[in-house]
Image (tube, rainbow, N blue to C red; front, side, top):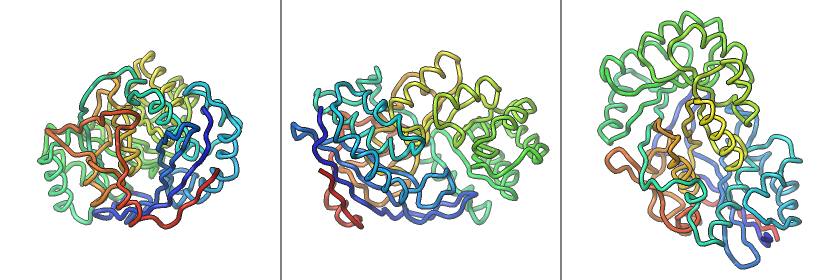
Length: 368
């Protein structure tokens, strides 16, 4: 397969409500839609989801755009891709920059699926038509507002609640939720906001029957995560730490965690994600799928990938209206009885909504 053209649309999607984490407040999501065209005229879709600020990880969408133009697209044009995994090998000479790689790599997977007239899901050996999902809840101004929001999500059918925490906003909100909803699967996400000096706090959190505590410490800290896990019954889950299979192996060997939040863009695409899933399955390490405020393109990918049998813990793949009033695809993902339907059809199984894309597009770049 030869890539003949790449179109890149720079978009801005306003959030329904601001989303606050320990990093700050997000009011809108900048993202890029990548459309790859092969020599037969087939088109594959990918999404660049890196943030504008280097606070989640070091990548930014601005730097990724430059890398895509100067390094990754030229490699694609020079390559003759014989099989779907070739693009992973093609990008190995570029260090890091996993979200930039993923935007193009996932589009190539979509292209291969369309050339072969099969769903992307079929590559993963799964036939699930719907999957259970959870929801991530940002930091709220008052506990009353938080409880009301959680109650609303549970009424909508979300099967797991994740709450963002930071120093000074942890024990009180989590305790309030646990008191109001004793049986709801509940977890906390710290986004690297703490250190091992906060051990006594985590011992208190350990009493709240949490499903897990996600990313308490710095994103390159495997040792102190392992020390913390030794003190807790609650599972530690790593997110920002995990960029490659080698990171998963390190975490497993050291005992840094008992769970992995797998985000396809953060590990460079589908090929690396599948390698991580295989390791987790072999070593009985809990793995579940996280989200990056994706539009319908990235959400369709997540839904198809999360339909694999290994994913038993509800992931952060909320309905589209959880974040956006309008989506870049027709028929955005909707919640039905606590589940979201996996898109059917060839490739990602979605159709672009050009009316919305044109409304939220800041700039378009074409490479050929």
